[in-house]
Length: 332
Ligand code: SF4
Image (cartoon, rainbow, N blue to C red; front, top):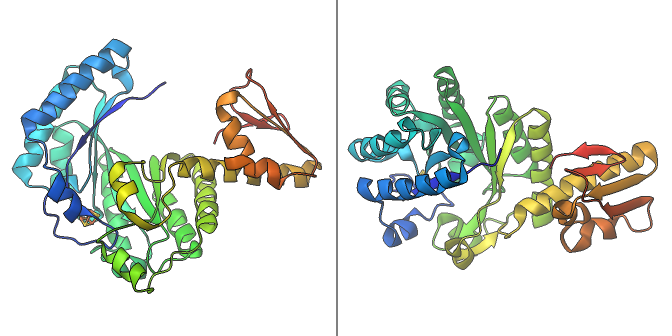
């Protein structure tokens, strides 16, 4: 079923933390948090649109942009009160929020439950305590485990977010982080390769040559490996790479920003599948409907060039639902 969310962006509201990659100070200088009335207006107008499309059963209200459970309590409950009305009247099926692992406890979960929050996403970023400390996250891997367990015990959908390529991280540590997060049985994952934004601590380290992110291609391979591993365990990866936004494009000074990062990773996954088939069967007949052809042949035809001269064929077949290799369907 098609899915439609309405996102209400809540800037970081003087978050006391100072994570190495975060540009909260730039954002909070330029964007004010919406008053509850303004937030309700955003939700109301989205509700009308979603009702016209007949998608109320799958649409959620998403409060994103910072640590929702760390904003002033009165403001948080005022936003939830407004949003909850639109879940109760059937315009949306639930509410999603994102927050930090150390901003979750029994009391806050009780409040979220009361206001019909259905999904909680935790910014875990890494499960390596040295990486967390080096990036000034202000919480530990144990905080992630504890918060994830509480969220699941209370019956919320659990989402986890991780960041690859952080200061002091390595491909091996990123893969280990993914494996540890998978053990927490999240319903969804978001994988964000690091983007170094101007005026952040990471930008300073990068400028001084103290932080050199591992190569871009390696990052794509790590993310493809992670995506494959999550898919194999039935965990939905709902985001790969930052959304292309003007703020990010204008302020990125390094790291792994690419407007089609998700597609690069999917193509890399397909390349691994083809390689496996080639090894096992001695040939690989690949086909895809038009909408998946760019993933199959790769960015700038990287996959078709890679397999040139080998027993691999690529064909477009609009009768298919997904990419197939030697007749087997793969959902990337
Ligand atoms: S906790 Fe979130 S909002 Fe606060 S500094 Fe870290 S990333 Fe930014």
